[in-house]
Image (cartoon, rainbow, N blue to C red):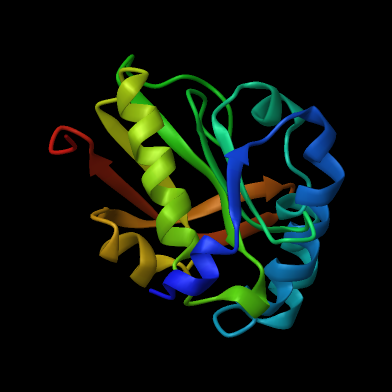
Length: 176
């Protein structure tokens, strides 16, 4: 972990006014991050579904940002009670949503710090288990964060559009 980088960043709760900045981060980072694991045709079809954050997530108080000294958003992560495809699960289950780090700021501890905030906040809200639909690219990160693989899934993003992902889950019982 690069402590110098982390101390130069500000971590804060997102608000409605951050929507354009988060969408821009997703649009810049996701194509670069995912291209090693997904065919260009799959990415071209799927990316429009990944680069637009649901405004309600920002208003929920459960979405965090990492900002550089100039205020630019370089990382983001959050959780929701509803699953990415909609609907509620068991009352103690939350769902990871839109964890991303700017492609120029990878491996600096930003995602790990944001994940810590997600886990702590979810646990404080009564979440006992956190589900995740991981991209193939993020699978090693989620494993390192204590998520266990449930199995491979294909996420339906639209008519005839299935996106390969991995369903993962982490218990929050062991958090302090």
